[in-house]
Length: 197
Image (cartoon, rainbow, N blue to C red; front, side, top):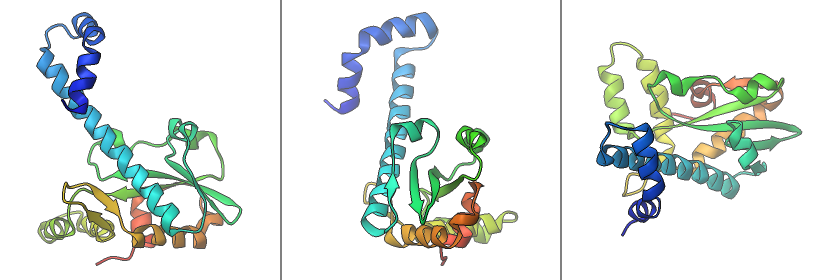
């Protein structure tokens, strides 16, 4: 029995009551499949975040801190750079507008930088083909190609950050940390921190 099946069975009674009260008209299968999909998507994004932090700690000199308190504020990790600190937010390529909103934590702080650290599930080859066919936004596809150039892919499809990725972000922070504030968009990170194909 897999993780999700064990989890479902141990929580079926409370879920049953919740489903009956709030999801009348939805089948168990609909709720179960939707919940399972959401849990796996969430787990994969957390593992990707952990991998970036692991790769950073293994390859970079500036200290990185990740805490539940930071995470609750929308900051995946905090990097100390020569007396300055910069937050990072690991961001998967998305076309959903609600996933591209501003960060509530930054509204409270002045002189704080939050770097959007992008990753994509598409291969470099797929992105370059899209760029060739693009009538508009070719530059965006080419920025995603830069990102993909610094990512690896395990046989199961899980995306990992290569050392060149974190070293590029480290160099970008070292050169720019004192002047950074607000949200540093994934486009700027891709353009200035990562070298491309």
